[in-house]
Structures are given as structure tokens and as C-alpha cells.
Length: 299
Image 1 (cartoon, one colour):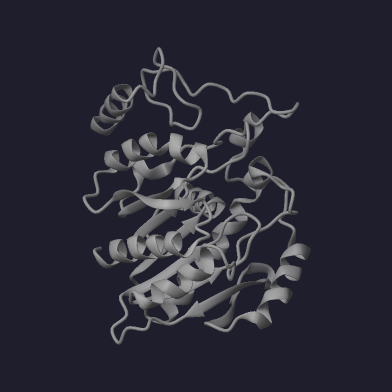
Image 2 (cartoon, rainbow, N blue to C red; image 1 turned 60 degrees about the horizontal axis):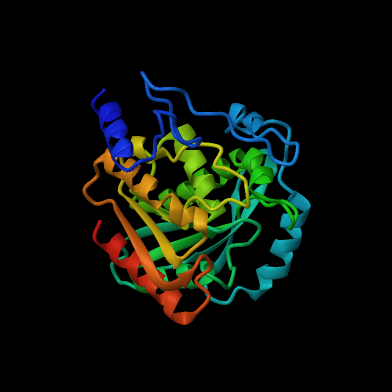
């Protein structure tokens, strides 16, 4: 009850509620109205996505496209080692593992890429997976489920559950190596997939979460599920670019309120200057690596 009252107080203070109506992505609070329905989008009712969130609903990732992507990048991996992590039903997931440069590694980072990309993506992902090894961490960059290249946020929501097994496979990979200090670092839609995992299974298997550009969707497409930060126990780093997508920036205050509600003293929200959502220039990506690495090393 204390957390419920604090959540209401925080969000009311920041003007998130209007006449006690809740934003669509927020959890219901006893004594207040339930989250309003999501608006129709080009004849599609996104409330069906909310009703079936985190359930397998007969929609599968594009496994054929995933195989094509993997075949194109597998032989181009120079920094790091290719690992095929075992999944159920005889499947495997492509990943890239890179050992820490430190004689005393601090732990293992699981890196989840943005929508439609891959574990060796040149913007954001490859620089992170290499750069964090220089900060003392092992990195494991994992292939996330993909759809066709034109797919948007609403298209991806039904396949979020397919990411859960991949996250568990990455955790099992580290534990087999004796690494138990495990942190998930996720960008864009990878962060959505990580949050869907936390929503369903909690955060007991990891020691921290870094979300980069959290809340990125598409034009007129609203967040289907709430940010689960208020019920997480591990430290959270919410980091975004000063020129990030407008949705990411607009929801920053709300994310921070939920992070504060969890009351983990090590949680932070940070902004990377002179950067956009993809951290394409050298100064931007180095700023991201430094902030993430410094935060990880302070855990």
C-alpha cells in the first residue's frame, strides 16, 4: 500500500494524471480509474495486444530472415567468438561472446539489440560489446527475434515472448562459465523484450539492468504494457540521448518516477549529450560506453 500511495503521489506531482485518469502504459492503482483504452490505429485495435501481452498467440518471428542475417554476418565476426546457444525444440540462437580484457573480470553483460538488427550491428551494439570488455566485463551479444524489415512496434509486440528463452539461454551460458554477476544491457526494442521478460519472470536471475532509449515505438503507436521498474529489485540505469526519439524523451520523467518507487539507491537516469537514438558518431558512442561502464563498475 505504501508503494501504491507513493506511486500516485509521484505521478500526480509531475502532472502525469489528468482528472485521475492514468496514462495507457501505467499499471492500475486501487481507487483510481483503470488505464484508458488505446486508440485505434489505422483500423487496428491495439487493445488486443494488451489483452494478450506476453502470451504466445500464433504469431512467430521470421526465422528465415533471421537465418539469412546470421549467414551474412557469421563469417565477418573478427572481435569475439561466435556462439550458438541451445534453445528448445532443437533450435539455436546466434550470439557473439567476447572476454573481458581485465585480469579480474567484473561479470558478464548480455547485450540485446534494437528492432530488426543483429548482435554485430555497427551502430550502438558492436561498439558496446567491444567497449565494455575494456571496462572489465565479458560481453555476450544475442540475436533477438526479427520480423520483416517494414515491421513496426505493434507488429513486434506479439513476438516478445520468443525473446525470453534467448535471455535464459544467455544467462545459462554465463552460469556454465561460473559467472554469476550478470547484467542485461538492452537497446530500443531489445529493452522492450527485456522488460517483457521481467514482467513475466521477474529479475531474480540478474544483478542489474541497463535500458538504452527505453520507450521507443513508432508514430501514433502507444506503449502496450507498463514499464515494470516499480516492481524490480535490481539496480536500473535508464540512459537515453539528448536528441533521442521524442517518445523516449517525453516518457523520461515517468520512467524516473517508477524507478524511484523501487527505491534502489544504485539506480540512475542519465543523458548522453550530442547523441541520437543510434549513437552514430564517435563522441556519442564513447559517451554511452563510458557512462554505462562507469555505472556497471559502481554496482
